[in-house]
Length: 468
Image 1 (cartoon, rainbow, N blue to C red):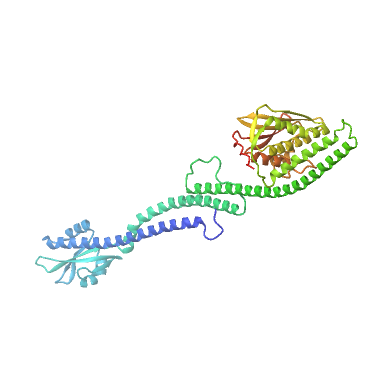
Image 2: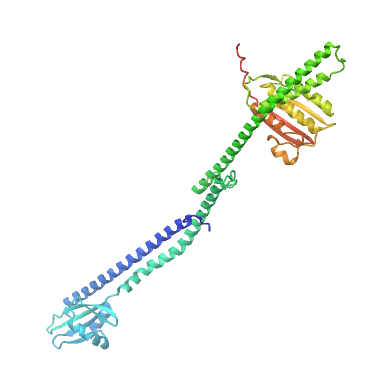
């Protein structure tokens, strides 16, 4: 049995009043039955006595011992004929010993009095004889005692009440015990919620769709509260993490953009100096490679800016094939350096309304992750597809795949399986996908790791360019 540790338990509060009310009702019924039985006993004795007296007073028969004995058997009352001349009892239905014991009382008792015979009280009625002899008849009607009358009337009530309590109390204890246990479980559940244990539920998943009673509806409401609080806490934690990540990313992006600008200026200055001095051999494309590497870094900076404070952008029509080609060109030098084979494909006329630079930054991050995962001799594929009237962007590699321990948290910032990685590539890609109303997901099948950006089929029309 479950009881609360603070104050009176719900079990006691439910059982005590019920049992108390039943007992009070039983006692009240017994008391009323006893009073009513005693009252009826007195009234019935008086009525019997009065009827016998009235009958004898109207009768002209002689009160012989045979007549007295017949009256005794018919009415249950004793009759004593008192001879007023001899001032002594005559015929009687009493035993001689009982008659001798009450003779003194009978000499003085009047109509309505009482005498005790063999320990039992008898009411006395006096009948004056109508014959020639001056005699009177004393009718002694037995009167039940109060205790005897009460017990006789109360025992049926007590028997029924005892049987009722014998059934009601165990059933009440079982029912209230189950109810108290259920409410105590809800109390403990709420206590856990107050300590921050959100997301747990009481109602089983196989429960009926319609709650059976108020307690189950209460448990369902508490479960919904727990799940909603877990969702809110997750949203708050994610939002706070995203805000901090945005601040950090914006700071990184600002410093990297300054470094990229300085590097581009230095390369341009070097190229002009080389040109004025005859220039490098035409086959020397090292400066072009350096510029493409800076382009990759700039794309990553754009991805970091996507995590930071959102910039004002106007959605525009994007050709997916040209977008995939741009990503291939940007990541081609990295593939050549690491020995990874890169292929790309996208159908013509596949277009999307969105933010080109953000999507390009997301694909570059996914492609760079795939190149690192594939390693020397590996293969990476970039694809754009028409999927369910929407757009699907796929980056696939034949590397070993992410560590199993990180599979559930790969999209979280700063989660990475590479010692030299910082874990922002997938966070950038996820932020861009959500910016377009889409999703980022991944799967490991047939020895290939596939990251997919699914973008919704409906996109807003591009906003008009501001008039200058």
